[in-house]
Image: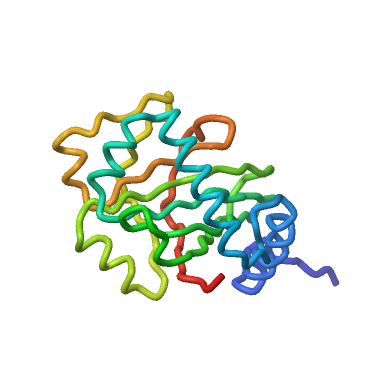
Length: 191
């Protein structure tokens, strides 16, 4: 009698895969287990300086935003089942008001790891308040990106500035092609 093992991915298998992937993500130096607020703030400062120098239009966005969530180092890794993790800070008027972690899980054909940074610009008081009130905010497909895949920045025009939340995603060594934050969840943490 032969037994057939179903290739379907069960919920338990998916969860175990994500937990196993967390060790690989932690080994990539993204600050997992580091609860030091000063370290997070230093990384946020360095990320903002890098973004402003590479993409000068983001300075205007920062000045017009009501707040910015800066995730200086997100590590994404996967082998069939993947995940991402990082820590960052929410800044309002240039001052850190809260710390957040970001988590993303996915399944599909994937092998490898990458690290990138991203910044969410909250362009309205309502968008910022909604983010801060939530116990776990998830990025949706409605985010508008302010850096294109070809490396050019989108102009901060009237249409762009009316979007409630804008996102800039870039790698530590350049632009992350095909960047998307859809499905990324943000949760407030105490460092």
